[in-house]
Length: 370
Ligand SMILES: *Cc1c(COP(=O)(O)O)cnc(C)c1O
Image (cartoon, rainbow, N blue to C red; front, side, top):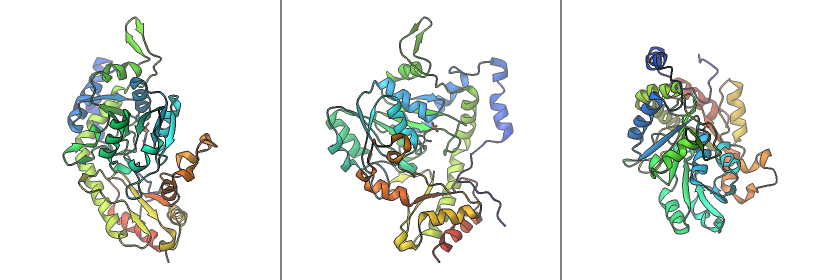
């Protein structure tokens, strides 16, 4: 017997008592937001955990991305990937920048550096690649292109919390990296996000942009928004960070069970950890090549949904095919991204997913072939 529904993910939470203990001081301080003690504490802990020079916390990853674009004063065109969550392109467009889509690599679905240079012109100001599913972008090639053309690189690292190349954290690449601490991510603060960066001069700017552009008690220098992480969210982060290594270890077991069961099934393309990378097992993307598999991604989706198992077509549709961007982009220009988006399914993946349930899901997937 299986307990359903099985959702694509399930938020990690500390013990109730642990969280209550963490928020108790707030009933003494009555300091609930505006960069209070918990906010500061979480920033310091994350700086250490991620091994970064500097970090700023936000209400969520999306606002973090918008604020870093503003703080850097970007204008013009931004080269990015259509194979991501809505947030990446929406942040670019909402800040008055023009997205230019480059195709992805067929092996790890990250932005293909070989497709970037031909899209650069005098209006290009930045590259915004995404470490999709926690797969690290080709950061060296992207860095070299950015240096040659004088472009900023801001990584959407929403999926890459805890990912490392050798001993080096994914948070250290480019000029800045955005993380999402949304409830569904590997590390969560309920809602939350951060920007990691090297240039310390960005810190006051980011803090001002996330607080209405206020620069002093009697001065407001920027048309900023409100994107400050509150103390209750920061406290959740402090608790969750204590258990993160164990959560990732449990995810590893789930991932390995999937790979064991699905490896070698004709037409099933798995996204295994890259060479030299410590993964975080954030997602379980599977691409179904209908010719070899004998059924489509949508057939698999329907079979799982019929049993109250809820995978996600993540990422489908491509951002360049969204209704809100109708007639602005041509997704045929990024054929690999289109191919993957039409065939990908992310299967349920979270630390507490029972291995018997993974077996069941894999049985259902295999059964679709017959
Ligand atoms: C979750 C996510 C975001 C947005 O983060 P929020 O914290 O939900 O605002 C941005 N980009 C990607 C790739 C994401 O998965």
